[in-house]
Image (cartoon, rainbow, N blue to C red; front, side):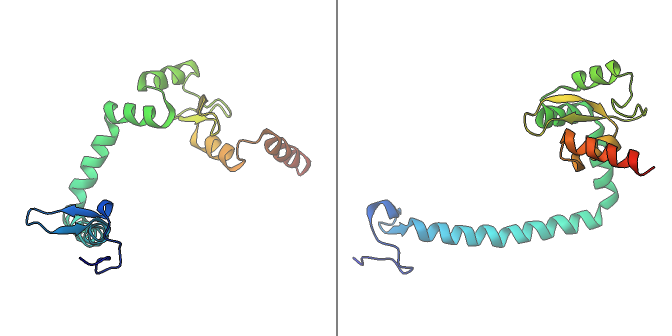
Length: 153
C-alpha cells in the first residue's frame, strides 16, 4: 500500500474512510472535492435564483414587502438585533409620545442602542440615529461639533 494518496496526503488511519467495496477514501481529498463541488453547485444555484428573480421580480418584491411588514417578522428582527420584543418597541414609542428623543420629530422611530453594551437607549428618528453613528457614539465629539456650530454662526 502506498504511503501517500494521489494528492500527497499521508495514508494514516485518521485520513482514511472505509468504503463498501473494501477500498479506502482519503478524507482530505474528499474535502477538497467536496469544496470544489459546493463551489460549482453554488454558482448554479445563484444563477437559477437570479434567473427566477428576473422573471418574477414583481411577485418576489411583493412577497418580501408583505413578509417584512408582518408582526412576526418585525418581532424576530427586534429580538435578534436589540433583544426587545415588538411589544417593548411599541411601549418605548408610546413613552416618548411617538417623538424622537433628540429632535422631537414625529414619525417612524428606530431603536437607538449602545454598540458596546447592546443596551437600548431610546427611540430616535433615522436622521438623529445616523448622526450619532457618524460621531461613533462619542459624547466629546458631539460636544465639539456643537461648539463648532455655535462658533460658526
